Every structure is written in structure tokens, then in C-alpha cells.
Length: 206
Image (cartoon, rainbow, N blue to C red; front, side, top):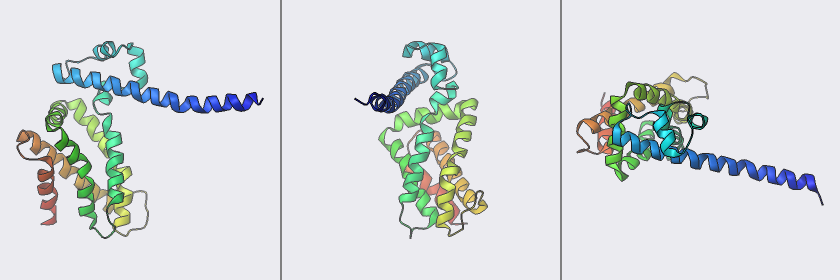
């Protein structure tokens, strides 16, 4: 019997299992925190409250999240990866700006599936300076995901800091932010998708 081989197999299997367990726990903490944020506001919710509701110690909470802001905005990292995948999946013959707009359908689709929840999130983010700043930081990381594909669609050679690609992606993200704020201002009476069409369409007319 090859004992070392069996031990190696068990150790390899334990890694993915721990990873899945960690993701499940993070999802549970996010669900608890979201409920508390909705019920009593972001600023009035403490890390201790979130940890207690989730059945964790304060120390264990910080093993999963560095800050309370990271709990509220955790989904942005995965959302950025999904937008990037959608951008890459657009037809090569499509204009780069149009392809980016279609990639943002990942975001407008989520809003359309639960507009009330999206509006609550928009409101919380816009009214909380620490969240707004953290959101901006996370959104800047989307450049790392989107800029290379934008550069490829522009027919430019790969470059670590392509100003043309970065400028277009930055303009697209600014249009997304403008559409989000407009959606909140009108309380969702106009869809995020239509507002995004208007904001991104305005640049085409310059």
C-alpha cells in the first residue's frame, strides 16, 4: 500500500474543500451584513454586530474581510471579471466602444433582475464617503481586466500602460457611474440600461 500517495491525495482534496468552505462562510457573512445594512444603514452597523449575527468572533470576521467596506463591496471583484469576460466574448468586428457597452449588460442585467435591491445598494454607496472611495479603488482594478482587451480591439501592440485603451475604459466607467447616479436620482423610473445608453451615446456625438 502506498501510504504517501494516499496522504498526498487527501491533502490535495482538502485544499479545494477548504476553499469552498471559505467561500460559503463569506457568502453567509455578506448576506447577514446586507440585511443589517438595509435595516439600519451602513454607518449604524458595526463589525461586532455583523460577526455576532453570523455566529463569528470579531477575530474570525477579520480573517475573511479586512474592513466593513469590503463586505459591502465584495461582489465588485467578481463582477469586474464577468464584465471582462463579456467584453472578450463580443464579436471582433464590433466597434470597441460598442463592445464595451454590450459588456456592461452584465451590470444592467443584474439591476433589471432586482432593481429595488440595486437602488438600495446605489443609495448606500453614494451616501457613504468611505464606501464611495473604496468603490472607486476597486473599480480602478477593472482597468487591469479591461484595458488589454480594449487595446487589442484598437489594434494596438500590447503595452503595460496604453493611454488610449485606459482613456476609453475610464470614459466607459465614468459613463456607468453617471448612469448609476441618474438611476438613483430618478428612483429607478428609468432603467439603468437606458441611462447607460444615453451616457455612452453622448460621447459618440462629440
